[in-house]
Image 1 (tube, rainbow, N blue to C red):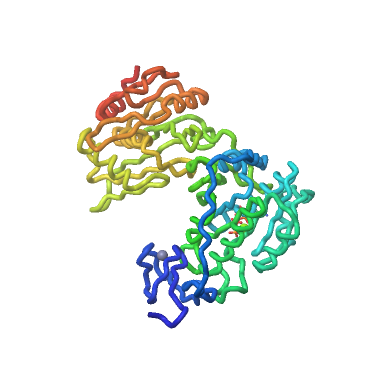
Image 2 (cartoon, rainbow, N blue to C red):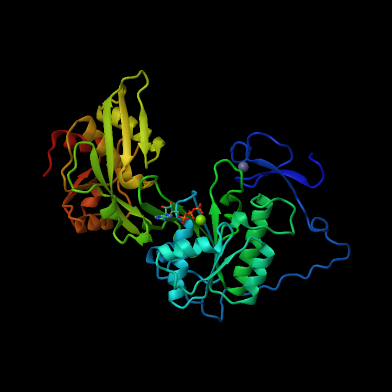
Length: 455
Ligand SMILES: Nc1ncnc2c1ncn2[C@@H]1O[C@H](COP(=O)(O)OP(=O)(O)OP(=O)(O)O)[C@@H](O)[C@H]1O
Ligand SMILES: [Mg+2]
Ligand SMILES: [Zn+2]
């Protein structure tokens, strides 16, 4: 056992270990264990002698008070991800890679909410007031009545927030906060947990919505956002592929709304622009699709989104052929390839396979199976799909094409964007808004693609 009061805490997942080791046995991250002194309040473990329990005061599920109304920020993509605006008193964690635009997004959200009459505070622990002002000026928000502070002391922040009523408080970032109640250094699991705990309590008690920015670090030099995920009401991640201007706000957890909702933004000099019609963004411009391309009619959260799958199947120069995939799951690709080989007679053994989801979006729906398979078959057979065709459907190991959720919604979105037909599960043919080539087996779809036989 380590010396009294000291423990090794994984800075990625928060697991406590008695001994140091190179790899965390809980989350398998490397070099994330850091010795931290655990300062327990005296008597926290053993109840004081003679202390009396008071029992529980039970309540009914019914409340006399109406639910407080949601607060809309006016940034529609953000409000959607929240589940229709903030629930007052909620605590939200926003995490994302360095430089993805977290501060930009939250400054914009604050300014927009403030313009609608909300009392907003933006507290930065990483940037000086002048830096935040500079960003505001660049975004044309210099006149916004958002209250700004640069502070890292948890005690001062809590005190300041008690003196003045706010509707929305942004803390950028939780890892910079520091409480003198704990010995561990800023950014350590102990500090991050303590600061998050205090701020969540403040949110609940005073009905303030608190947004905490959490940095994602791979090396574990500071505590990752995962250590406080369970403490907050909602966890959003802000994502973007390098080299693409798109940013996607994704709800990973939400106690007040759907957890798979996304908001789409485009980064520009003047801040983030909301993207109202993401399908147009993720489709390759020009509408000319060559062999190996298939447009997937997907659903992200509550919204249908069309996105192009691009496949390249080429003879391999090496003994072990390459399998590379961007924007989709590599395990899923392996499965679809295996089904194409075993059930449809396509051989990929000596060929490299590349699969890419255009536009930098990450797709995780099983409904994308058929689109990926169609793109792969189209490239392997060197035959393009019809230009105006969208594809969706789940594939089973037996080679069946299974129906998926919201098929009509997917096709309606496709029709809106000028697509005139769909390739999908046979069940999609009922009440379809556009003509559907329905297939029960993947082999039927591959046959059609190879023969370019479309009605
Ligand atoms: N002067 C500028 N002109 C145009 N774009 C800029 C400018 N300054 C910053 N940006 C854009 O804003 C992005 C950084 O945004 P922001 O500071 O909000 O990110 P962040 O996620 O808060 O980063 P950090 O992890 O450092 O806190 C940059 O990647 C860049 O795309
Ligand atoms: Mg920032
Ligand atoms: Zn861990």
